[in-house]
Length: 329
Image 1 (cartoon, rainbow, N blue to C red):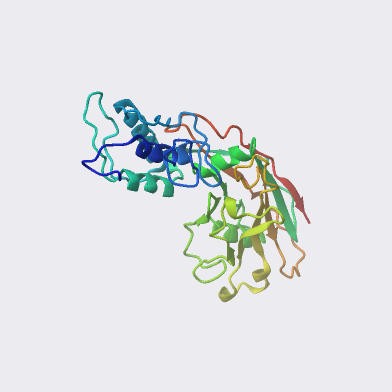
Image 2: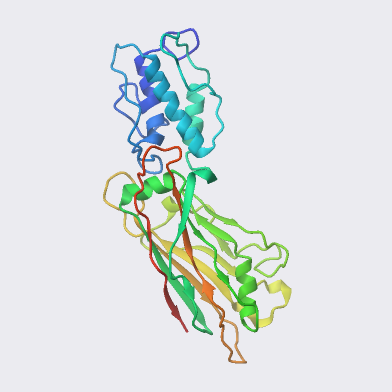
């Protein structure tokens, strides 16, 4: 019997919505409340402890059980900012329980949009990220972001966590100016669950690669789960535009690579728990004046960690951002 208005509500239908299968034993390969809210596998699962319990075969689905299911849906909705059809998340004891229209559709919507809204993450930064020495050929910053384990890394990205970069240089005099203007256009770079985004506002100067300020490389469809642990992936590269007459400074570029390390052996489909980030500032132009770049480079790594405003526990734990290890020449 299908779940529909006017039909009796069966325990196996409730279990399917709650756990992913009618037996109530759980199936994290399909959209369900617990697939998103609970441990899950791979790119689904927030690691929350108060999952929805299954209903035993042949028993009545109570108002309290329906309210629990709807409450978890409401928490997911609030954390993600997803728009769903259901607006009443409480079933009173003694109230006649009818099939809730769009319930299956709304669970699918919550599963599809299972990352965080902006207000559901809290940012923190690493320390010791500035490079203050002069250099003329290259400067490289290597930083690691370390999670307590593979599941913790999964929960972080699955619930909308991100790693953000925004490189800059603080001086616009002399040779520093070329680098300041280039880095000003890079903007915010973010590694998320399944994407690598760029948000930038300095679109007017036309200084960077391409007249439309487009990067030379932008791995926009490469998220945490798409990184390869056998080699570093170039996520972003930005050079001075050939079309704007900046001479041999056009050989200069900023790029960033990421490597997630080996999979953590928990068997639930994480993609590594130690992410190594390398930011390079490559000055390949012909330096006939033999001058150096002297402005301070800021290569700060910021972590946006899912918070507990709408979730019930900190399943991610500690996220450690190392101080940048710098080399320059």
